[in-house]
Image 1 (cartoon, rainbow, N blue to C red):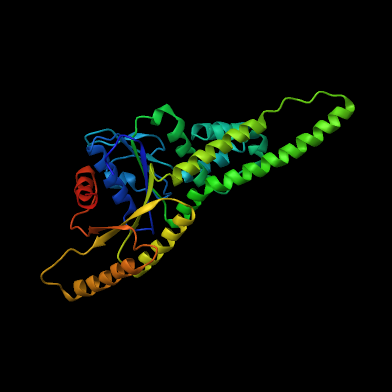
Image 2 (image 1 turned 90 degrees about the horizontal axis):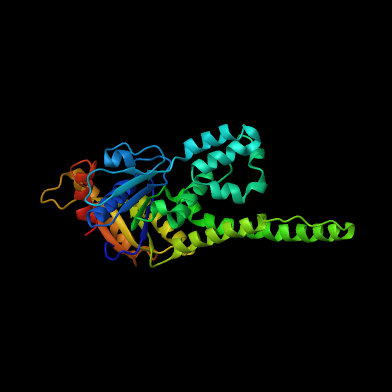
Amino acid sequence: MVSGTQRKYYMLGGKGGVGKTSCAASLAVKFANSGHPTLVVSTDPAHSLSDSFAQDLAGGTLMPVEGPDSPLFALEINPEKSREEFRSASKKDGGSSVKDFMDGMGLGMLAEQLGELKLGELLDTPPPGLDEAIAISKVMQFLESPEYSMFTRIVFDTAPTGHTLRLLSLPDFLDVSIGKILKLKQKITSATSAIKSVFGKEEPQLDSADKLERLRERMVKVRELFRDTESTEFVIVTIPTVMAVSESSRLSASLKKESVPVSRLVVNQILPPSASDCKFCAMKRKDQMRALDMIRSDPELSGLVLIQAPLVDVEIRGVPALKFLGDIVWK
């Protein structure tokens, strides 16, 4: 995972509360300490990167993380703040403030290329999928902006399963939607041209279709990135319980359906070996062994590389603790 200088993307996801953030942060520290300028991005509305690194990383902008050997930056995408700003912006200046707002959060290209949709008419209701659109806009920036060109590893701490799957499927949805809009525009343009030719009026120069086509091309790039086995990998994180393993199996099946490459499964919080178990520990260990057996026999999970992360007796908080965890998990 640390070899090579080609940029690689790692998305860590799974059921809520399984330790995705700790695993993502420890992987980011591992990369940085291995010489890779690294960016860790949280797309989870309930951010905990600041807690994990024990540093204030809030604000929605690139924030440096102190401690690792190579540059490590964190970015928390704050959809709740973006929704509030969207509501305020949409009430001003007939929608021009909406564009200013979208420029500020990295969606300027989206606002410009979809300008004819009259964002001001959305009133104070943010569009469905705004959270995912914000995250997608950041991925587009990672691909195109010089600001992010230094990073050779980008690690995503994703939201719980449903949100993450919507994020991964959004490029397909936008590609199809933009395609339908372009077809409709072609029909309208053809009809308008016919009418104008009858009355002998010159047809105005329109470039909105070109802008939509460029947006569509960007969406195709993002979709290809999510499915590129050479540069992208989704790592499923779970804990050894029947419920968590069952959800991980469904997540794996959904990722395969979206053609997102996944080859590793981290099973977190496994009880370490003990010479003398108390009754509670013995029962807990028995349940965990049952969950691990489920993984080994599950058709969706059995083919993945199984990484067992032990339950440790210290709180994983701060760069030294994350390095400690990373040395155990990401061998």
